[in-house]
Amino acid sequence: MKHKFSFFGIPSPLRKQIVRNIIAEQGKPEDGIAIAKSLFSLPQRELHYVAQELLMSYKKQWNENTIEILEELITTNSWWDTVDFLAGKFTHESIFHWLATISSTDGASGA
Image 1 (tube, helix red, strand yellow):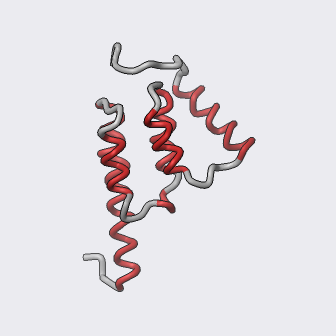
Image 2 (cartoon, one colour):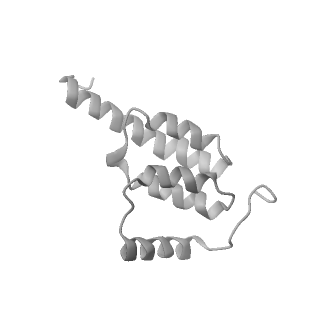
């Protein structure tokens, strides 16, 4: 990642604590997916990690457009670590979430 992204230099445990403190003080944002997209467009790598973590906490907002958002994020400021997370964890969970939604709305067995 050397010379590819700028960094604030905040270690992961501290970054996560900062985000927890902000959410505790200001509450969880209403549209976490839009905020995650905005964070991902910024140059600092720590903000990309916050965006990923935020996306996972907003599963209830996922819908049929989630895959398009995923594609956008994978191709924006992409590097192996964020692509691995997004293509692995986020894609896997969003597809299963979407399939469960389809099954529950059309009465399908899910098979």
